[in-house]
Length: 305
Image (tube, rainbow, N blue to C red; front, top):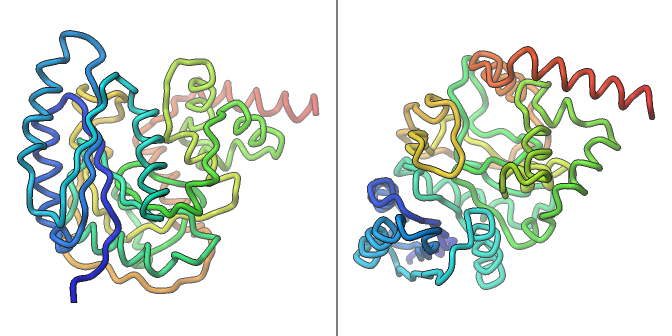
């Protein structure tokens, strides 16, 4: 009997080579042939992008190897944030759950197995918001799976019940983080500028859906399930994407075996949290000046109430 799998929402734009590598890796997944692939293709922002967008669309029309392939070609440019939020919402409303990928994420052949096992096991567990497929290389050994009070955006899955609490209002999210004096924890022990990213989203300096999803999950007290070994590699850190990050974050060996997904205590892993913070410090994502400014802001907020 063929297993019932969650649909995959793949968001593509104007990078044909990246898209091809993402799809080819996904086709090698054990559950690809049992999975419905829904491709959301955004429209070009300007005339110079028309050829690249058309190249992507020409390719995705040839894709096979899945239970079914459907394509949503946007007639106007929505931008990454609106495209993902609207696409995830529509798939969740129709199917109740979704696996989410972007066009620069190469997956392990065991990615879909992990995601579907997690979606099945924790479907009726309100404390769990998502399953996350990526984390950076850690120094310390961690459990086979573990929870974090956050949400990752590089290869993930969720249910309609969890996505329903996504708050698109960055200003409200930031105000609540500050009211509850959670900025340091939200910033992974002050090692990554998530608060600053949220401030930039509010000011229009970025249009990140991911920082608002992360903040929504964090403030709700919900958890995301992570695997010991990463199942996703980001190949888009070459300046071709909407947002750039340090070039070696996603460059690591992927899981080469099935990851067992079993019931574990519904608790944030402090050991994993320390590893995230240690990794952030090692890559120096937050320089001394930025950290000092944020600390002074937090001290001022405490003194002013």
